[in-house]
Image (cartoon, rainbow, N blue to C red):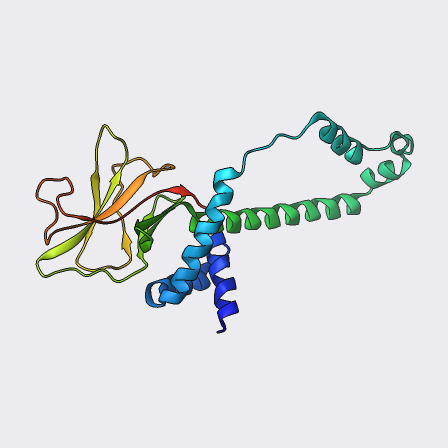
Length: 232
């Protein structure tokens, strides 16, 4: 695969366009291929600027008038009822229409099912955990309630120590431990007793004793940290 192919693939991953095995393969490459991970981080940094500056807009009255005019039924169409009368008096036509409507409803239901499934597989929130300019991990919060940490770099863990993942749901509650691991790896974070991550929520990784912090609060140095933002 060429550098241009990698760049395009990294852009599609950052935009959330990859699904299924293609997305899983990209996430594996983020862990094992530092050059590809840099491409992904570059895209995420560039695209995050659009989230910061894009503002919601409202359609004006003039636009709504043009939309209504484009879908309005001409008055003269109502003056020729004979075609519709023949249609409604035709049992075969009614049967065909009912079958077409049923098929359309089935297609719509299947399409909605796929759309819902695809939406569940796309993260709603993303946090890139950094140490200065170095990215160590990314946190994905999904619509189905899963929150997953994916390592982007190797992290040295001395003997007798572990990596503990924390989040800050509110200043009043303080930091909460949501995961413990002996090495950098993909980890499903435990946020069952917490609200879903919201915008600008802090996540961080600290170095703690092997069994985790003895105090229930971070005691070791902060290795990586970052705040959530809406995924594109």
